[in-house]
Length: 324
Image (tube, rainbow, N blue to C red; front, top):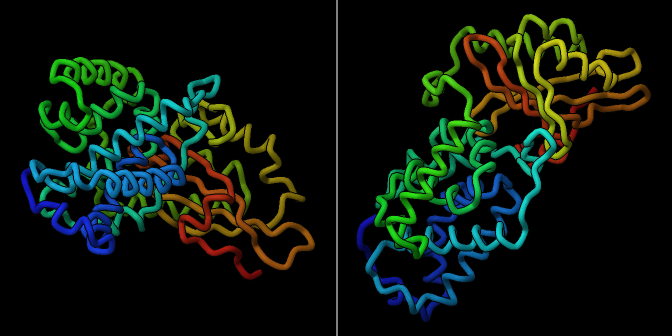
C-alpha cells in the first residue's frame, strides 16, 4: 500500500470525493464480512466507513493510498461495532450470526491498482469454514490476522492501520495463529485455490440435487464422509457424523409423505458449491424457498454442510419461487 493522490484536493466536492472512495466499496465489504461474518452488518459498516472518511477527509495527508486509509477506517469501524455488540457463540461454539457471501459479489470486486486484489476474494480465505474459524478469535487478533496474513500488509503497515505498535501486532498475530490451529480443520493442504469443479465433483452435485428432489434421506448416505458436519445458523446445534446428520433431517420431517415435493437449484456462495432447495407443500401452486446448503467437498464426498434458511435466497439472486 504505497503513496497516491491527495484526497483533500477534491474534498470540497462531495460527489468527486465519493467517486474516489467508492471504487473500493466492494473489497471493503468483503473485509468487513471477514471481520463480522455478516453480510448485512458489512453493508452498514461500509456506509459508516464512508461517513467517517467524509468527516475526516481533511486528515488525509497523502502519506498512504486512499485504499490503505479506507482500510484503516473500516477496520476500526468494525472493531468499534464488535466492541459495542459482542457476540455470543452457540453451546458448541457455533457462529450463530454467520451468513453466506454471494459469489456474484466476490466476482464484482474490481482489480486494484495498489493492492493484491486476488487476496481479497481468494477461495481459501472466504470459505465458510475459514470465516467461522476467524469469528472465534477475539476482534483485535482477528483484525491483525486478516491484515497480515490475508491482505499481506507488513507488521508496520498493520500497526499504523490499527494505531498500535509493531510489538502489539506481532503478539496479536501469534494469538490468532494459536486460535486458528485449534479451530481450522486439518489438513490445510486439502484447501486448494479456486478452480473449475472436477468431473467427480460435478457428478456429486448432480446426485446431491437428485437426492434432494426425491426427498430421499437414504440417497445421501453415499454422498457424505462418515464424519460429515452439519449446522444451521442462526439456529444453535452442530451435528457430527453421517448417521447423526441424516437422522436429524428425518426427525425434522424430511422424506415424509407430507413434507412436500422438492426442486433444487445449483448456486454458489463463499466460493463453494451450494444447493438451493424449494418445496411445494400439498395444496400449493408453486415451489417456495426452503433452504440453501453450502457444501465443503473433500476427496469426492461432502465433508461439511452449512444450511441457511429462506431469508438468504434474495441475496444469492435466487428466484422467489419456482413454477410447479
